[in-house]
Length: 610
Image (cartoon, rainbow, N blue to C red; front, side, top):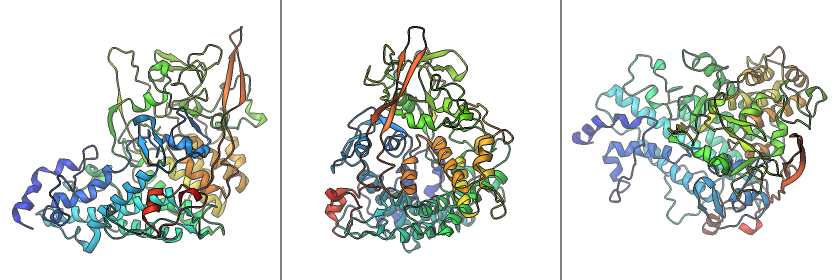
């Protein structure tokens, strides 16, 4: 490389921060793919651009809108693509973007197929023939090695990331072959804009490649991007400035996620226990890192609450680049009466999943649940996730009343049907809402929002589910932690609003559930539902747990509330909000790709898309 090219490096260091735009490998139209190798900043851009391709918030079809295709939520918009998927009326056309309302029209996932394969091309360009790692980035050899090794690790990590994203979305049983298929693995820089004809690899082959790429990444990446982990204290090109980029502990987490899905009934009909074991083993590695390494001053603490608005939250294992101050989620969830669009509402099924404050489910006689006063004495997580009839939205949860929800049908301003901006279920969503925002204030305060792709809670839930399958709920000898003890972490920590939950000594329902592996498995599933609601995870959980469409095609319900003359309320929980009519356990391979590639087999249940 020419000396003058190397010297361009002096001013670019600040571009590496997680909150800045990553380097673009194609800054203008007159660069060819071969030109990239003449400019080290463009070589770095092959890796950096992949991060820009990742989702950055929960207000899309990879976040909360994916929950409307589950039993947790219902969309207010009847044309929303994932609502059409849920009711069996999805069309083969591409979707059109409509901002925070999601997407309307046809296939909501064709855009992600293209995005992921374009990202794979960039990562593979960096990896091919080791050209990326052999590029000269920095004059000083030590710093140059830090940069090139990290970038090589990130390229492997990104290839694992985008292959896993594709597999989770599009893996399924072939329509013609009847075999469990993955997606086309791409290990070369394929130009997706050109004429190509790719065939799908088997599901097993895809998982094994993802694991292999994670392991390759681990051989180059630091375990985490933290200043205190840089041994010699030289943080010029290492440490916390790379927070927000993939690291070694994220690779352990991706492996846990991949193994957990691969171990689940839909993809593991013979119940290969080694898959569960690998899911638990890798999740435990992340848990141990957080507890024993990241548990430093102002760092991770298992009793610390989750802060959705902190881009540096210790809860994060891996997150998107945060979005600066905005009111996206508040606008999305609040009803029209409080300047929102009420785009998504929680179902009665999700509301019923939250237990009572003594830890027992509402169906247990010991819970003291009352259908006449259904929101009294609930698990504090209910109050941190759901806005319901009569609840007040208070400034910073403790201050002045900003809004009072009225979802009773005989006069309530926020009731379903009164406005198109009211939830159809008579529940609105509080999770991810910044309670310091009041549009009526003279000075409006907005905050940044952070999408946590992988967080501490996810790994604890992974471990509990998988370890229970291997050794049962209470055996700690194999992993150094029992599944029951892992769930105690979840049940003992405060809510997002900093409200205390249970203590180990008083959580009798946890102890009862841990007496039997089958019962504990059901317990973990409910806890996973509660903890991850509106994060876009339940869609995949329901499918990996299922072997048929019966559970998916149950109707979801709303509450109808009548206000009585004496000011009390009467509740009817039997009103159907939406009937579900899934054709398949799997998402369709985008129809446009089926048309252009004869080798590409469609998923089972999508006969009209072949």
